[in-house]
Image (spheres, rainbow, N blue to C red):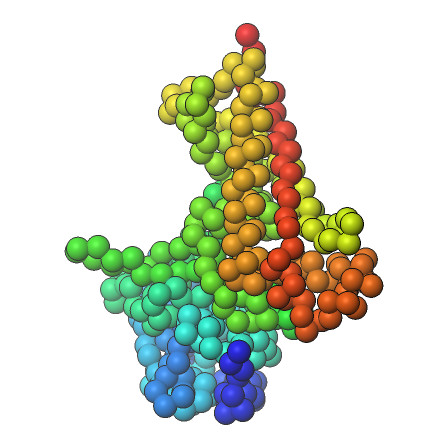
Length: 380
């Protein structure tokens, strides 16, 4: 596994000092001198350096309105500090990161070096907000994503951040990976889930859009989940407020379910000397559409539908969990920490260094309880 080189570590330290020395400390008496950064992209540069892409809000714009005009600049540097310095020298003024809604980390960086030092730099930058969203570029560069706009278009950074919020809150197909919590997870060395953003191209145009979830272990990218897989991952990990599911019922047709109140518990169980993981999930559901016309189903069909959907959700969660476990080798539920606490003898026999490979072989069982509320079902 590749680690962050000493040169890149030194670059991160230099950047922290560079930013904290005053470039991010704002003098509000000269607002016209501020470089208001709406979004950042970080890619590998030439000769082991860095490439910084910054979406800059125009000085007279109201950045909170969502209709702010912006321009995008690119700068290369042998270090991050040099790249950021190029931005300052070119535009003039002082960097203001308080309104940066998103930072996009290149897929190439996430695959080849730990993103933890980069997150540390951002956390120690005096003006970058702790709630700034962090995402990973998928099958493209961060530069490609931030350049999917015209010079007069609204902020693409703000649009992407809002799209993540919507996919997280309404559909359950993305996650909100904010800087401060993400940095704390990186320190712990566990699993991290980040939104994945890609560039979608057709015959006439291209655009940046969300494309599932990036899965990281120990701050390294291990793989991606598609939007549909991401939805069942957020259910399994209790990493969302709720979402909407479409179920194809053989008897009732196409059913759309709105679910919420997710409760998930993953626990290690030792039986006859063999460790397995039990995943129990509870959801509250409401039928909101039946075959595109009706809003309800007959009450006599309630139990049938619940059983069908419980089995369907259980199967899809198991598929996603096994993919994360076996293909990515990622302990998304923190089973290692639980086994270390509750099954100490087993933990000693396996050994911390061997846990990741041991974890990929653990059998998993999923049990889903769907509480289908009566107030969404017609009574006969």
